[in-house]
Amino acid sequence: MGAEQLPVKVGYEVGYAKPPTEHRFQKGQSGNPRGRPKGAKGKPKAVDTRYGMRPTEAYLRLEAYRPVVIREGEKIIELPAIQAVFRAMGVSAMKGNRFAQRTMAEIVTRMEQQDHESRLELFQKSLDYKVSWDTEIARCRAAGLPEPMPVPHPDDIILFPDDGGVQIAGPQTKEQKERLDAALERRTEAQEDVTYWADKYRRARTEAAKSRCLDEWHWEQRMFDLINDAVHKRYKVNLENRSFADSASKEGKTLEEFRKDRALREEFLG
Image (cartoon, rainbow, N blue to C red; front, side):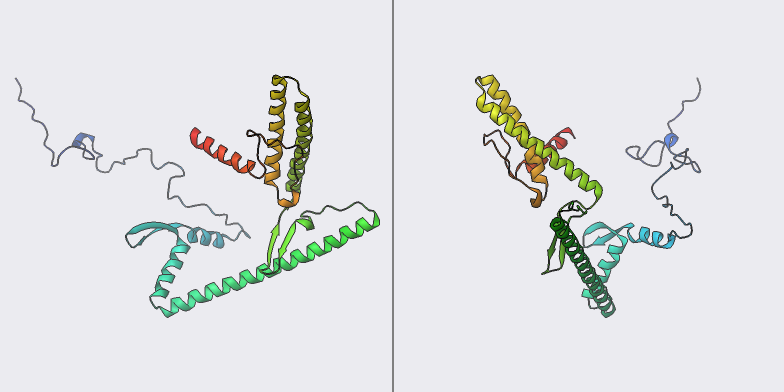
């Protein structure tokens, strides 16, 4: 009989994250023989460096918004690099660093001034646009000419003189105008169908006929309310022949209920 082979003794206990010697990676051998996969984390993003593409600005943006990890008290948090810089500046300013105080105050003041100027410029341009088109529309009406339909419509531009705010309550592009027109057309069809089925319901003689008419009535009423709830108040209209049955949709609440139902369904389906 040959000599009995004794088990090889390792210098540590074999267990989780401590494999036997024969299963450990050998010195000089990569743990991933196929190498790093394409698009692996850490690969630098490509920037278009052709003439006129402003690559330096692109690289600056990449660095400014690159996530960095910092410690804040007992917490480790991740922030964009530029936010981490401003946070450090704010901490230094609060500790009495005069350079940080002056720099931060200048940045904030300049930013607020630019915002104020941009707000006033937008308000003035919106006011000029609104007055110009209101004048043109009034001229066409007085002359019996077709009324122009600019996008955005001057009636959709709401101005707030107290703070220089501007709100556009309607479509701002041709494509948005087309979608709004299609939605309002469907709402008109829903109103016609509500009136039709409400009349059919009142004329029905059997419970089966009444039930069918009521289902159609409520379906079209819900379609009307979904669209009417979604548009700005300037485009809202009242539904005629509204059903107030418990199963019928409610004015001003249908869209919100629809969104909740969809969110719950998506959560359930995962």
